[in-house]
Image (spheres, rainbow, N blue to C red):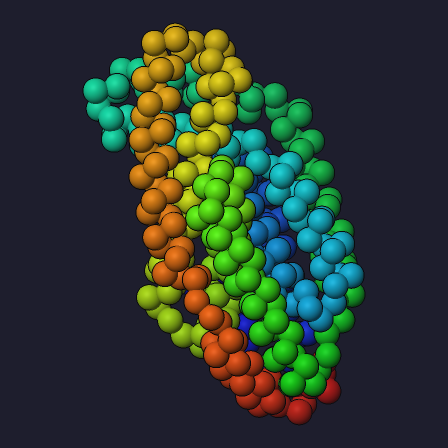
Length: 309
């Protein structure tokens, strides 16, 4: 189960608790990544995404803290992206082979090259270890900074911060959706994917403050489809840039690009339809209800807990 805001803690205490929890989990995965890099680097990056979603949630209460710490964990995640991207390319080729069995042999050849490239990239133990060590050091520095987060203890102010953080996330997703509908460029869908992931992570944090199982499932499904669409774009860019290294002939490239266009068109249509249902509405009433629920939750925090804060 995803971590959620605790009804028995003030917002500041709870945010710091969640930040420490997720960063500790990220550090645990980094420690395990030396032996099992593919699995644990991916899990580490997921924890860092959760950290950044929480930072965005409380951003209206401490902009300076957000700017510094979001940049910290963004850079760490980017430094660890290589192995996951290599695996995502292989998974993309597998999906294409399943969707277009007549080209299975073509994809088998591409897959073999991608697996070899991933193995070669992971074989430089010294370089790989240095990346993990640098990420570990940066996350440990982040842990020392958690206590610098400054949020008000007042229930009304805390509720306003949470509601505003959610509102900003929703508006970000709505704007990205509008651009994707109007232009349909790769970058537009990339921005939509990032916005959906942040909102989904914040939605998990809210728990009973926004109870909606149907929305949770919809966000999860949309995030997956947007991820697949992004993977297609990455593979397409790799083919355009490095077709020779992938041992792809001109004939194979034409066939693969045709499949990529077909799958991309299907996924864009499905993503736009799902995103429209999830985001294209007026959120004023929902935000007002969230504010009221948050205010009641924070007002119910025991006085002794507030003093302990």
